[in-house]
Length: 272
Image: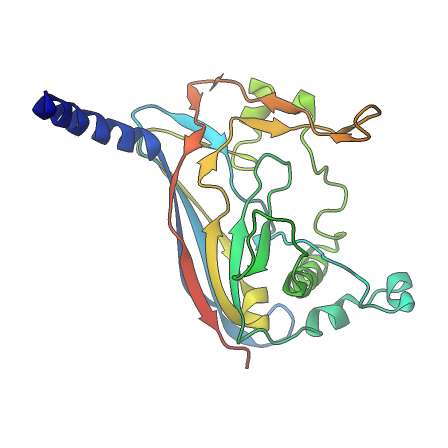
């Protein structure tokens, strides 16, 4: 009987492993020579983070993307704007904000990628001593990075702040097969059998501020739902974020939710 149990375990384990790793999200970093987006007529060697989605299953799959980007750059939170005098709120100098940053070269950070259940899925840079599962203050490095990327976006496109005019939540009307399919490679990834899809994120801001960064996917599983517009619950005295399940099928693609395989990747940048 013991031998039979061992035999069954050998049969079951590979199947579970394949199921658990039907989707892998692989992180890597490469360097590229490109024009400095803040200092005119100069060229820098800039790191890029690559996020590669891979379908290891024997059926076409779709799922939520783990990270959004704006014009090739990551979206990071503002912790506070209290460091600016009142005049800066009335007449902001975005270049001054972008070049007024601290040196974080001696600090160690985890870069947590993704909260894909919300419409905007960005990154958060946390000190590596922080338990991200607990309530914590947003580290000031996020403000410095956000200011750099905001200036670059405004300079390149004359746009508003990265998230201006963008809802933080899905609308219920977004969660239909037709709308999801039209959102291909924005909020959702669609992969045929054995197919991969890679997106690259410009780390020029990280290159400027310096630091020891470990990039990692925040959740090692993909959810099968999204949060829609919050409403105020008078009885609970708080905002409620309704959950809406994603369609099981969109065209030929089956929804994947569950565990993923993902690696971490680290980089050390010295602010010169």
